[in-house]
Image 1 (cartoon, one colour):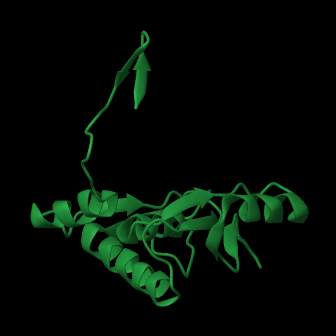
Image 2 (tube, rainbow, N blue to C red; image 1 turned 90 degrees about the vertical axis):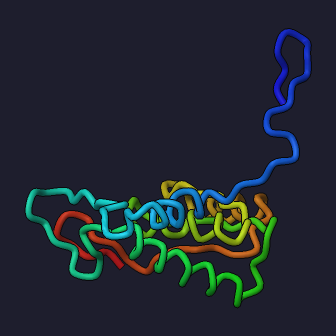
Image 3 (cartoon, rainbow, N blue to C red; image 1 turned 45 degrees about the vertical axis):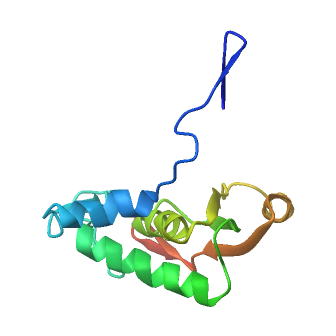
Length: 145
């Protein structure tokens, strides 16, 4: 609902969409499955993160999204549930957001610069039924875990 000059207007009232479908499946249906969908930009030229691919095709990204969406569903996450995402700036963050969209869960990305107490209160206040996080990530050439 939008307020324009005191008038109430509705955009696409009653419609639904699935962003994961539009971003991935539709592109694959259009023959773009083998094209690069997500490219990881590293800190330095030539830097390699051994446990992260440098890129994902639409098909690879869809497979990763489906795998995480199925795992979330198996844990009881369903349409309308809130899921907190606490991850670094890595390609897998996109996978997590699209997996939530795939099953109709609402994702909430939580900024990692907060204290433990502030982070916990934000996750609790959001009503999240699950938190997606990571064990470690590559920063420069040092694995933080």
